[in-house]
Image 1 (tube, rainbow, N blue to C red):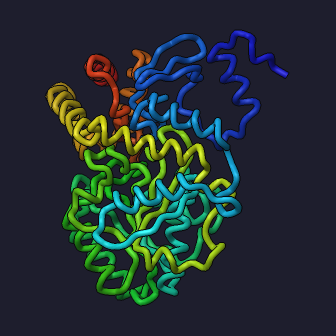
Image 2: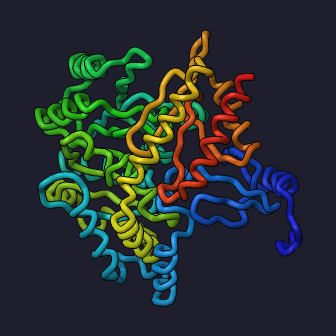
Length: 429
């Protein structure tokens, strides 16, 4: 067995990883983390990276926020696991109460806790089916809802999420997500659903419509407000459960605690994970009490659902967001980033679009021949070589998404923007 006290290098550890781990677990870099603090990650060789990924929008409150660490340590000293279904604990109830109050919608709500975003989406579908006694679900092209079988069926992207895994779950239908940049309007999306109802699917069979208020893996395309309002009206007309997947958009990322607050209507069910735990695994479904109560006792839950450490972290995260004004900070950081990208744009004509609410910002690159995944990859690589960790996304792989912790210090944020400009111009050279 490898002596883990021995000095390790990134290259040597990458070789060991390839030998020990299944290749289906994709890894974006060969930097192996050794320590992280707020928006800085240090690898095992001592290289420091400015983190503009945040574990894919997980540490919105920064790596190892002192309030989160304190709460988790206190819980460690009490107990780490009982399984809430076997021996419940009060802080599970406390976090449920806070999410019931915090999610959009002026109606009675209830909450369940699970462990991952995919689980939250799966359970939301289960709940909708139990409440409506219907089976069919509508999702959208470009969507990402997880890697479980129902999650990847709902997901609107084949490679890498569906390729090679055989038949998908039945009774899941996809409609185009509005994206004016690529020629799809709200009217186009709604017309496609209307056509689906006329040609393939009786709306009386539809249990739920699932969508992301801002698509994550699909390219950070915000749902237009007229689209969200129309989906709400469509669901009301046909008795369909509206599910907002806020796994990536939640917890101050878009300048609101939840992205649905931008649209003035409420979903029936909200799925959440990522930023809720501040680095610890926890996920939830919150929604209308009468819908949430449709499942029989024992039909929902899981051994680790609402683990005490994740619950403690979640309570601390909500405190940090409120006390440090992170929704307002997301708006400020996002505006500064978009202004810097706009300033670079005259030197980079391939920068076709800059978008996103709050600090859920994207830059999309389109060249003369269409979406330019090669240029996008070079931007990421040039940034990494200069110490800035970026993520790509999009069906075409041509979008850089920016997900730095909302707590990033101003001077480090300014340094990151300088690196970003250098990387973008170097990638084009």
